[in-house]
Image (cartoon, rainbow, N blue to C red; front, side, top):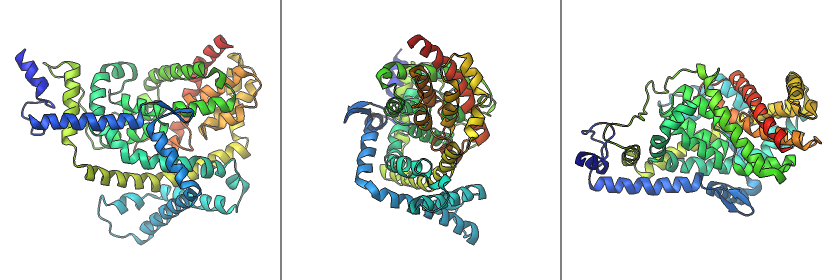
Length: 467
């Protein structure tokens, strides 16, 4: 009994001679480090509150404030980012300078031909949209204009605060603490390590891109396998409560928002249980980015689950370098996201929205869906089907297209499905393709279709009870 008490006071990571184990005064200092920085991370990313008439998180308030400060200037920041991203990558590809392995310049601009082409398209599109020169397919307000005027002005300030403050959520013990407590539940239900609970919470209360950034970082550090990262990225990258309300209001079901949100939560939960157990996610290998796993969620003899959760968290906080080093690394990650992702969002997002606006592609893709909607007794099935498929291009499109549908039940189904589909190429899809998680666009579309089918069954069942 005494030995167990001693162990709860002196944390270990797996053996009693670990040189990284904090002792005595170090243990107390590391405990405070874990508590204070993790509390800051929770406050920034997870705790929702009412602000200016909407439910948001502290990160959302900071993002909105910076967005207001930047105002119209964000247009020029965007153009500079996309242009430098392309020209820098082109210079490295053509001039072939001798760049040190792991250097910031190499990480930012040494890309393969596919991503160079994507950056080039992004640069061409951004200048076309700004100058209003070129095909309407690209420069229209409902295509490139949505990316340029609606999405990017939010993403730039969001990524600024999210990337710089993400270590408070992921690197000071919170992942280890919650991961240990939730490990048994998440392994049984979702076939995932417990630490993915943090991804789920940061997405649910913050934004899909925030949860995805957590997943990408954890995969790069080999805390997740390729299979686990693919599951988390396509299953838990749910949009925030705040944006869910925006969709509900746009499609005209905000009077039923409580039921709307509870339906989304139920559907997401069921889909999260099913998706990891079927292809393509079930077929992904349990291989790690560095070649081996850095994660051990086993609980040694002599510890309760809570004791081991505290021990792992404090030991993790103790191992963290100085805040200056953490900040410097985060700035590098921020530039990587800006130069790597923003051009991709322009290239893929604009093309996707253009296809939705100017071609019958999504109507063709939706044709097989119409009989299913009719079988599920969904009114105006022919109008609802294309709206649902358009969610692959952008999450907001189904709400914009679906708001003209007369049946409130059908609008409820379309709006809820657009949230639970998760994969949309204007942001989440582009971010996944840019990441080291090995999912291609065909796999993403397959996952999108599977999630749509699962969502339809659950959401329609609830809708028939409500309406």
